[in-house]
Image 1 (cartoon, rainbow, N blue to C red):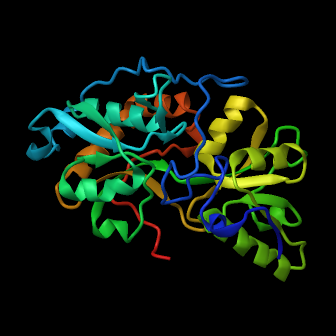
Image 2: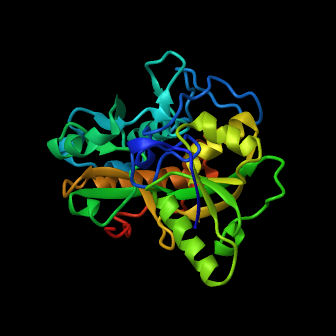
Length: 323
């Protein structure tokens, strides 16, 4: 196995780049750099406090499923972690959370006849917040796992996808299986799901007599960006949401392949609620109403996440097994 160790000390196991950030089942803001206030190329994202969100109609069927304990005050308290665009980030006023997760939270609440109370929350704090009743829902890139299902209920709203990204003028056009990475120099986050997948693919290639992957690890986003743009690396491999945002914003990279976050298993991102209180069923119905009327698709397109969309929200879908 070829490795390029460009990190030092204990940071190696912890640091990942913005292009890599958001390892499945992990903090969406663990390594994300601040979002640019405007796009210099390609798609333009609105990061102003004024969002002009899509209008939403109340779904009577979904609203009827909301537990009395939740609808009593007419508000839905939703925890989000505004540290990684396009999922959630602080707006240009440095205090208003905006992004895909915020739009989903607002639309879901409105579909249930409620008003969203979006609460910026450190990612590590949401489990205790839900269990204590401080938050009625979490919409913060939480991946469904079988272990988490023991304590929480879920309503899925996005697929967990990892993405391979190459320099925009790279001759590489497709990466979707092990042979496609043979001999490639790939930037990946140490200790992440994506590294585990790449290690398995590399082992398969070597068993079949193909060239090994050269694994590259970097301390920060600027270093990995320089490596890719200067030709020292061929690809980056990490969670698709942040990499897609960066690609669409600066136009310097292109997506050449998507892989399920739990490969070979599918992984779901879901609204997370307190176990057994009944709200997850209401969230599922509200999300399906948004999917049916097209609002859901518009929100994902607005934030460049159409590739991660789902056809139907599932209640407590299969979760990733305990590793």
